Length: 320
Ligand SMILES: Nc1ncnc2c1ncn2[C@@H]1O[C@H](COP(=O)(O)OP(=O)(O)O)[C@@H](O)[C@H]1O
Ligand SMILES: [Mg+2]
Image (tube, rainbow, N blue to C red; front, side, top):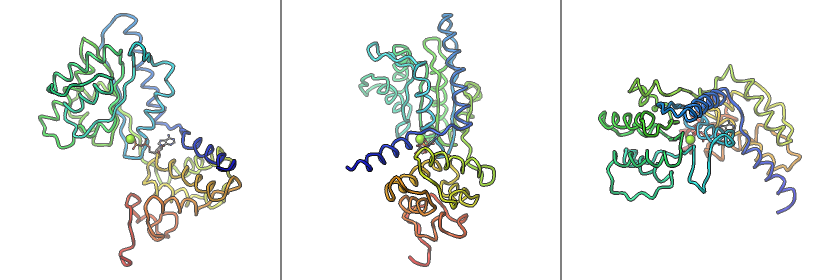
């Protein structure tokens, strides 16, 4: 690999790892700090209070998983972890499929590093989970893709999910704060039970707004370009461009950031460190992601608002 290639790879890695702060992240961090301080105070006073948690909702690509990862990174120094003593204050896992209580319990046990034998029923597994949460001194349990907990369930099963989640937070043995993140269907699970809803701070990552978010989006593109030390052409500084970018990202914040990083990578890899970021780089990225021809590419098409940006292999009807 040439030196220039190595340099470009490093720039791209740096862009990929950059986290753009957002109002919803600020809210997430503020609530988390409150929960952590409360927990510390309770433990110091020897009080066992029922725990509280957070529910983070947003469409796919909004940035939920990334936000939680950043939360852990930012609070590393505050969170207790000691692998030698098996202490882990924050445990994170993705809800498995199928999301029966038995499967979710088993996956949680595995995330806690506990070898699970596989023959227990749901309630017994969750008793075991609580024992392990206490042993590991786990204060927070994060379940990602938590909307799946409601999928294909009968009302009775859904109630048992809700009861299990509540019992993780409300018990005198070792209450653990739940952090649930997932798609908007997750709201239905939480709202099914007022007691559960009351225990969770709600945060929603809203969609971008084609009018209101023009300036912030252009700002983010400029900041990324500056970080990569790449000049920008005027065509990626206009209101129309911001709207095309938001549409291509289906108005999701995370996807907007992701496409911008990919466009800068494309510029750097094709034109080197002297590259200038232009509209064609964004158009090429959209093509790579979707295989869409120009009339279906929001960065190229005249009337881009009619395009469904989530479709791949979409071609204009007449040509197929
Ligand atoms: N705050 C952010 N700053 C920079 N990039 C982000 C941010 N949030 C999300 N992204 C990027 O957006 C993409 C989708 O984010 P992800 O967290 O996977 O979304 P979700 O979990 O909501 O589906 C990822 O490539 C991620 O790097
Ligand atoms: Mg995710």
